[in-house]
Length: 174
Ligand SMILES: Cc1cc2nc3c(=O)[nH]c(=O)nc-3n(C[C@H](O)[C@H](O)[C@H](O)COP(=O)(O)O)c2cc1C
Image (cartoon, rainbow, N blue to C red; front, side, top):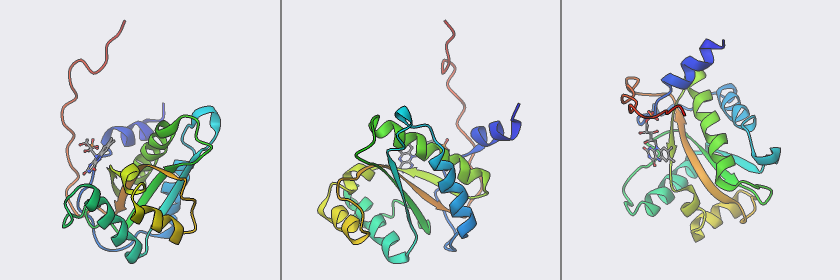
């Protein structure tokens, strides 16, 4: 039994406070590579991962997410120095499901690599807005990309959170 893998799956938690220092290239690569090995419908790999690290681009995505949230002063990525955006491409047969699988692999890999991470919502809405399309153009990416999920990624600057107790009837056997 791969007990270390099971330990990672059980103990990963959403981190919402980050140190400002940037993660290393090696750490980023470990996380994104794990994403590329996620299952995808019919194996189409119809997902695009975009790693956002320049302070200017991180600030633009943070502000865009805050706009969708209708809280312009908020920082929905909690000051994380890296944001991972997950898009479905035109090859994606199983729509947001593939992107969710990629996202989950990367969250677990981040924990395994000693990083903090949090799944952040509203990626779809962000890249439907003119500002989101403008960012895609600026990054030389197709405007046809559909946002699925995003991740705040960095070094945790907090105690590791405890999970809520699991609900009693989470699993039934039939
Ligand atoms: C689809 C989805 C969207 C989420 N969006 C956000 C978000 O926008 N902001 C945030 O702080 N956490 C977000 N989360 C993280 C959840 O709040 C978190 O996973 C949940 O509270 C359970 O905590 P845990 O991840 O530590 O087990 C999201 C999680 C999922 C699965």
